[in-house]
Length: 272
Image 1 (cartoon, rainbow, N blue to C red):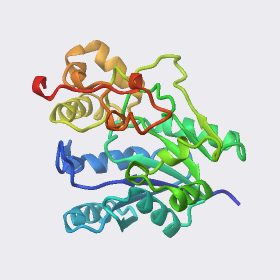
Image 2: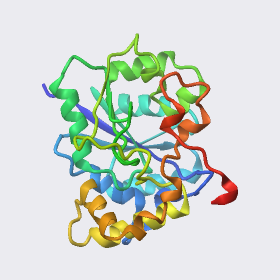
Image 3: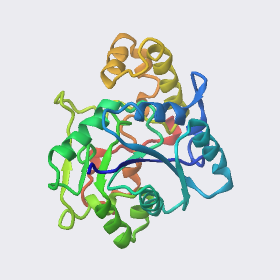
């Protein structure tokens, strides 16, 4: 019997930098809806589940899930590892994909590439991602793990960063888990130079412009289509270029063993 693959999209309206970002409009639909739209066209058979919190402010996400006819789970706001585990258990996952909700430009082909690597090496890996190290443009984050792997992390993780970010316990303990990584087949590394995710108003401007330029002629536009667009119109790249390389790692460099300062960038809030 084929494995039951569940893609869990963690989503909440609370955001210290850009509150409500996942409900911001992109061509008449929410940013979350546009992202789900892209995940639903992957080649692999999978169930997409939105995992949000029980907080009243996240009722809007449940309403959006119902509108999209996508299943959902409500759990802890802060313990995102528990939210992933409980959602995966509720939907009988054998294989779990973790996808953050701030990646509305994620390329379905990249999702398939990581799943291909996982299934083509079936039984060899507990966890496969394209993040350790990352090479794709930021915002194409894909993490695949077995249900047993996720359960072991859920049972043993204790540090706040492990609970908040779900998977650090896995990739920080290579003696406990068999981990694999997928690098970008171009041989390039744009992880610190190109930013396709959303945390700041400039990111929204970038994403809105990319959709305006590409969606109407090719609704399943690829990562390469975006890069070609940026070559033609470098002013779009400049919209959020100041934040390229800025990610959550910067807050935890003293705690993480497998992440270096070269994999993140600090920002001077006085200059942005």
